[in-house]
Length: 139
Image 1 (cartoon, rainbow, N blue to C red):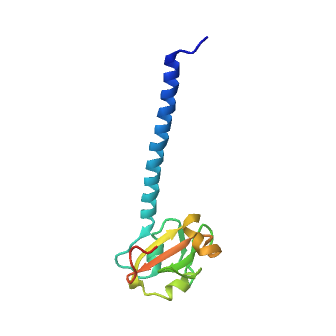
Image 2: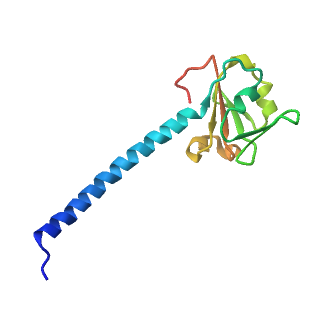
Image 3: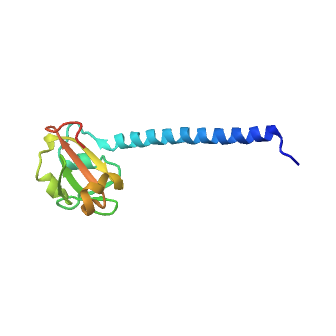
């Protein structure tokens, strides 16, 4: 039995539509990722401590029952980075260096592509703190 022209056209149409659908499905996923990245940045209006910023970050566990507070991301201590300078893996190392009123925003970096520039110390994630004295395009 010889295939008809209509079955060939139908096959070509299916291939064409599947390739178009693949491209349009990927675009919204990219936009969703951009929105998720934007939502990871936290700004607080009247903070009392660095902990006020950290409790609002999704994925950050803050245990304030100890002194200094314990901060965990993905089960381990994150690397604190202030204006691009790695400070350390403890809350005290970051809280002792800067004033709460100097903090402009706090961002959590957890994907391997974002944390790879900080090396092994950033295995559990990076808490990126930006102060008022830095440029907005810095990342």
